[in-house]
Amino acid sequence: MSTEQAAGTQTEALLALAERYAAHNYHPLPVVIAEAEGAWVTDVEGTRYLDMLAAYSALNFGHRHPRLVEAAHRQLDRLTLTSRAFHNDTFPVFCRDLAELADKDMVLTMNTGAEAVETAIKTARRWGYDVKGVAPDRAKIVVADGNFHGRTVTIVSFSTDPSAKAGFGPFTPGFEVVAYGDIEALRAAIDEDTVAFLVEPIQGEAGIIVPPEGYLRAARELCTERNVLLMADEIQSGLGRTGTTFACEHEGVVPDVYILGKALGGGIMPLSAVVADRDILGLFRPGEHGSTFGGNPLACAIGIEVIDMLRDGSFQRTSTELGAWLAQALRDAAVPQIAEVRGRGLWIGIELVPEAGEARASCERLMERGILAKDTHETTIRLAPPLCVSRADLEWALERIVDVLATAGS
Ligand SMILES: Cc1ncc(COP(=O)(O)O)c(C=O)c1O
Image (cartoon, rainbow, N blue to C red; front, side, top):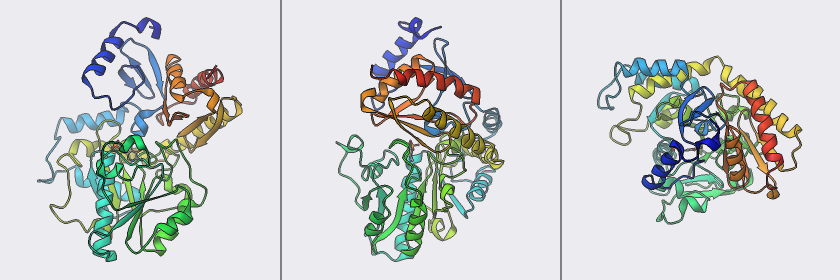
């Protein structure tokens, strides 16, 4: 069924329900998805779309990957939750596997990305007081402008996006914002109270912003020199998205703290984690942090499978190869409405020229052509398809993307 036929049907009824009963904290495209498999989704009218957002990288392995669904079913039939009041036979295995994947000693599990970032903030502060010897309540964490680390009050306290903050104060102190990609600004911001530099190796929500070559390496050296933890928020950039298991690998950088989420739960369960060595994560004592569902057996069973799927590097390879091909093909198309194509692997930001109009309008037109992509910051369209997408799918999409953008703003 075409999108025109869909008007006035189930789609409209469900959009009206959402409008009436759901808080308006998002501005979704007007598509109502009912089913999905791999890189493709089907809406309630039976129209198929190529998913080129992959739930902001939570669906790196695609919708309902058979191995992940099978792992979930197996666990669902056996044990779903114990809380951390008791041990279970899945959680420790997941922690070991993830620690080994990241080549670190320990794991602290939570559910959402924002919770993992909160955990990392607490971790850094605790380390600062207990190990670095920062005076009580003086700990400072340096962050980058344009950051996106989640939506809690503490996290939006250091957001530079006015819409994330306005009307939600008072905010949490203890953060200093520096320009992203500017190593001298970071150097100047670090003082004796600085416990950590919290950074996205590539900024996702800001529009797939890749920092200047050498930035992460220089930040690593600076953090080591000044006894500051380098905390990499790899919630969106990690687990294969950029062509490597962790985006920090592109610069050969190993952070002190990895912050992971999204794809860790296979697009089935929320599962996030902070991963670090014992001298950092070992500082937590019982009762100081936790979450009832954090590291539950159902999520962990899926997480174990996710980690196993990352081991042979095939998803990472697909991201590298298809990402390079798609980015080049978009550049080669020489569409005047495209100012820049940037990114790494299958994580691509298309920057539109002002005359192309708002990116949202182009995303709506892409939707009409069977492609689901999302705008960010008015002028950027981001493409982040599941890493199980095929070259044929992308060729199909490319033709439509070029077609839509070549007439954008006219
Ligand atoms: C880099 C980064 N950190 C943290 C988050 C927050 O994750 P969640 O939405 O699961 O709380 C996101 C979500 O987009 C993210 O991209």
